[in-house]
Structure formats: structure tokens, C-alpha cells
Image 1 (cartoon, rainbow, N blue to C red):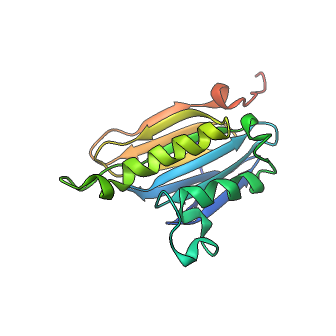
Image 2: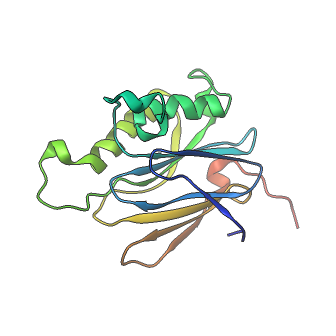
Length: 174
């Protein structure tokens, strides 16, 4: 992972990086860090999605809060339309259920993941990596230049993965 400042997406926020930089989220419980990467422009956008669908008046002010409003904004930020979205690649982190014995209606993490799966499938955007579900909180950092991701789950060893090939990142020969 590259050293330097990490641009974090707080709850309901969206961050972007082009060509380089590190972006991520901390404290993902039922929320899902939803990252889209465009290999053509070497750009990434990340939303800290809190809920599956917008039912509140704040969706226009904070579109990253909801899966259904975050994805259209992420597409616009990457200059992609629904017809060109299939060139993008997705990474999903989070969607845990931190509280046991909840009714199905309150299983926010699972509903977030299911909604994002459905929306990404409709757009033909492939998910190249995910670290979702379960019952632990997570944080992660993604290096836009190299394609390396580091995921930290509560009570577990950090997981690092090289996603360059899956993301279509071309490395220069040494």
C-alpha cells in the first residue's frame, strides 16, 4: 500500500480519486463501502452506503447514503452512462449484521448487499472483490494506482489483495 493521506468516505459521503491516491472507509457495520473503478481513466469513486433505498428528503443532499441514489451519482462522476457502465469494476466491503436476533426488516447489512448486487447486475458491472456480510465491523483502504486493497475486520488479521489484474490495471515492466 502506498503511504500518505487516505481520503475517507464518512457515512453517506462520496470520495473520488483519479490516477493515484488512497481512498477508503472506516467503521463499516451494516454500511457498505461501494467502490467503482474505471480502468479506462484509472479513476475510482467510493460511496459509504448506509441504507438500501431512499425514503427520506435528504437523498438529494446526500445521495451517497442510499444504494439506489449512490450508484447513479458514482456513474456520473466516472462519466459513465447505464449503457457504458459495463466497463466499470466494483468492490464491496461491509454489510455486516452487528446485532443478533433482528427481524428480517432490520437486517440492513444484508439488504444493502442484496440491493447493490441487484443494481450492479442491472448495469452489468462486475464485482471483482467483496468482503461482505458476517457479524463484524470493517475498515478498508484502496490504492487507486496499484489496485491493492487492505481490509481490516474486527477481531481478525488484516487481509491484503492485489486487484490490479481484475481491475484492468496495467503495470509497467521493471
